[in-house]
Image 1: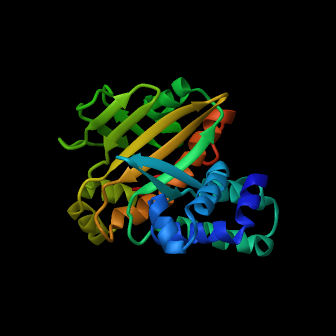
Image 2: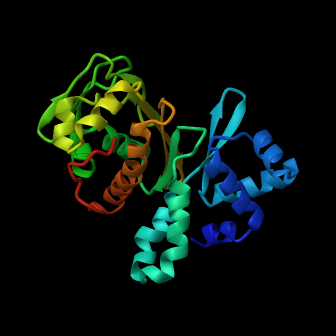
Length: 268
């Protein structure tokens, strides 16, 4: 946590976070131009923020794009600040909300967390129905081969569609698949209003990608959920669901217990 506080103590680094909060997924060149800072200064600040896990980076072609990562702030709130009263935590709670506000010009949701486990164990947790049912409340029926169909089993009902497929599958390294179908049956199980379900069904199908990178006795997990339309209803819903779900996954792998029991709610 010391790295997070040190990173946030500098006004220049807070300006970088503000810039990414307004428009996520910027390159080094774009950040330099917007903040009128030298390339060297921005690079140094970004290195500190990345070391504190407050930002995460993804390669897109020849460019390196930078995204806000709210996981450290969530960790402060969930594992430390909960021991104190709300008034004392208000400033950091405001920062949490700011970091988790959907970006205006980039709809990709990017979240990085570090889990004390192995790539093999994490892969199992992402694919084995016995695992996913514990922290997610969902079981996937698929052989996890690229191009294979996926059936989502949730709340005692199955959702299948020809476009629900595995996109990439490199065991212990990378997994990607299209998101589930927003059917009327799904909406009724999740308590989603009919009008909201209609909005969701009209949007293009999004996809989620899990990138797994071993780091000593830990694993870096980066989740990228993208493919949303502008002003996407689904984008706002997954924004709230993924942090809680990934916290549950991390706690389960590190302690064998759940942070909270998965609830039948619309996380997508």
